[in-house]
Image: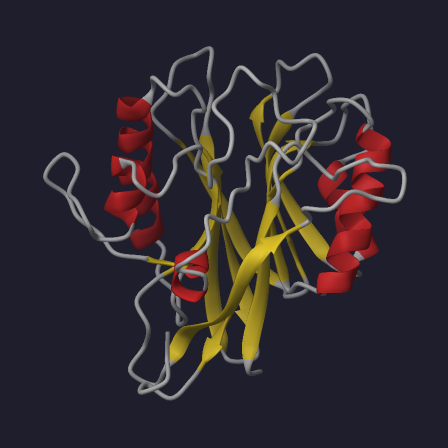
Length: 271
C-alpha cells in the first residue's frame, strides 16, 4: 500500500435537503475513492433520517463507526463518525471541554491497514467566534487523546475545527505556539501542498453558509503526525473537495470538504 486517501466533511445533520445532500456527498466521495472519511454533524440511528454515516459507507462499500455527541437534537442523535475501507480494530471517544448546551467529543478508530495499525481521530469544535478560549482547551484535550492512543503509523487527525489557520488553536496543533504550557506538532496537509491558496471550506460560494457567521475561512483540516524516518507520513496531495453542487444546485453541506493523500516518499522528497 503506497498511501491512504482521507476526506473530512461536516454533514450539516438534517438541515435542508438532507436526503439529496447525502446523494451529492456520495457521488462526490465515489469519485474521490477515499479509504477513510471523517464526518461531523452526522445524524445517527433513531433520527429523522437514515444514519448518514451508514448511507455513505454503503455507497463506498465500506464500514462505519458512529459516536453520538448530542442525543437531545430534535432530528435524532448527532455526532461524529468514521467511514473506512479498513477493518476497525477498536473505537473510543472522549468528551471535550465545553458547556452542557454545547456538547463536544473526539472519536478515535484504530484501523488495520496492510502496512500497520493506523490511528485516526475526528472532532468538531465549538463554532462561535468568541469562544476561542474554549477551542484552545479543546485542542489541548484532543492532542492528549491522540497521544494516549499511538499506532504504528503517524496519527491522522481530521475534522471541523471552527478555527482559521492564524488562530491559537491551529497554531498550537502545528507547533507554532503553546497553550496552557503545552506544545505539540502535526502537519496541516492542505497548507503543505497548497501554501498559496486560501482553501476556504466555509465559503460565500456556498449558498448554505449563513451570512451572520464570518465567511471565507478555512475551518476544516486533515492533520498528520510527524513523518517517520522511512518517509511514511508524507503528504502526497491535498485539496478542497465537495465544493461544487449537483446538477440541481444542491451542495453536500454548508461546509466544503478536504481531501488528503498521505503515504510514503523518500525523505529528501517528502512534504
